[in-house]
Length: 181
Image (tube, rainbow, N blue to C red; front, side):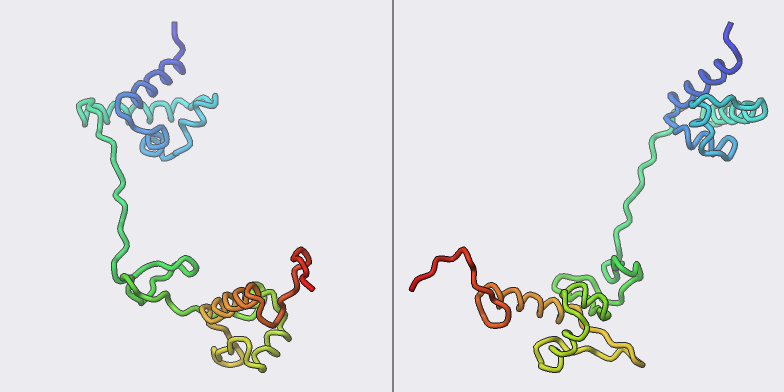
């Protein structure tokens, strides 16, 4: 003779198999607890009240649907609007249209980020700005300043190109290169 708990478990597993409903969905719809079926599978015995609620839900579902298996629901992927897009950093809609050839929005970098990206210290950045060899900062209001991201990136690309081509300003001789005298 089977115990009531085994009968309950076989009834629930048969229902889940027949309908294709997930165990989480069954627990949520029957008693409002999405973790119920996981806990039962882990060995927790349901109370008689909970078992009655689950069995009543199963009976009502079978009566209402005629025992037919519901087709699986597929989530439709929402496509972003062609006029707006979400930016990665802010997750706020940008006002710029997203079309072919549209430029990315202008982004300001604050001093700590400029220091991190370039590897330069604050005094060096301001000294190079004064010498005209580094992009100028832009006033953001009050005492706040920022640098335009694209200008800093362009400076970094030019710096790499100048250094690799052997131009002045930091190009070191290669010790592995053969000397010709």
